[in-house]
Length: 276
Ligand SMILES: *[C@@H]1O[C@H](CO)[C@@H](O)[C@H](O)[C@H]1NC(C)=O
Ligand SMILES: *[C@@H]1O[C@H](CO)[C@@H](O)[C@H](O)[C@H]1NC(C)=O
Ligand SMILES: *[C@@H]1O[C@H](CO)[C@@H](O)[C@H](O)[C@H]1NC(C)=O
Ligand SMILES: *[C@@H]1O[C@H](CO)[C@@H](O)[C@H](O)[C@H]1NC(C)=O
Image 1 (cartoon, rainbow, N blue to C red):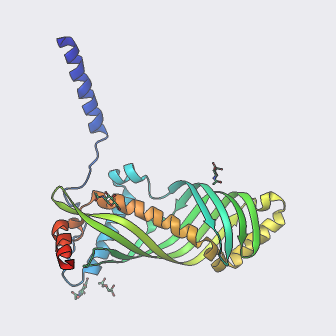
Image 2 (cartoon, rainbow, N blue to C red):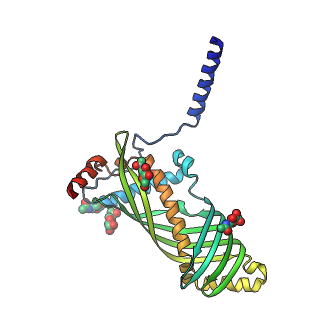
Image 3 (cartoon, rainbow, N blue to C red):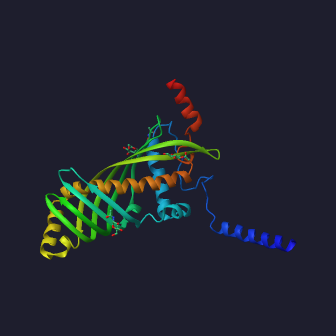
């Protein structure tokens, strides 16, 4: 009897050690030195916030173990599958299935401006990406710029000078005596400076010449071609940023960025009273 108990205790110890081996923080309780705290009720908040968010992002790029464990590496980023369908558009009627996607460039994100609303703590963020490159396999059928398309093979999309205007909705909540951002929605507006495309095996390889001239046509008309693909790029960027920001801000208290952020209970309580 005592013998069994002994073994059980050893078993528990081993499990305990196993747990400490993969130990990771649920959230930070001490502000890392690289973060700059800002005060939203003081002038020049946006300048400070812009630097602070850039610092956090740089740390994520260098590798925060908790983010790597839940999100995976940011650059290159992999996506197993993207299914894309666009009907009733002037520029494209297309259904595409992209698999084994590798997306490069997110580590070079530059935060140009990070505004936070005092009204509802939503954000308005200007981001610049010098390059965003997607590699993967495609399977598509449809029509882009009046060209009937059919094929399956490798796809490369190389975007230059991507300006992103990001609109983020948040809901504040309390955890362990801190106020946190729950990032609930991200929407983006995109402008790009250039796009290079290469679709291999277009028309299932029936004619190399037609494949080449079609790719050439898409590159000569990259602005129009991008309009056809815009929903795909927007969705990819929104999905990536939402997932990343949720993980970043469940980990790091909002107080570390906005020192004078109101307690969420007081903040929403006050608003409710105002509405009544
Ligand atoms: C804002 O910050 C910059 C430096 O970061 C400073 O030159 C400027 O005077 C500040 N403006 C205000 C209104 O505090
Ligand atoms: C502060 O932000 C304003 C507005 O975004 C910008 O024009 C100005 O150059 C910034 N100042 C510094 C010192 O970063
Ligand atoms: C997309 O392609 C993958 C791999 O070829 C396949 O498993 C999946 O069923 C396809 N999905 C659609 C909607 O065609
Ligand atoms: C964050 O918001 C989502 C809904 O958008 C909700 O399901 C979730 O419980 C919230 N998380 C916290 C910690 O408040």
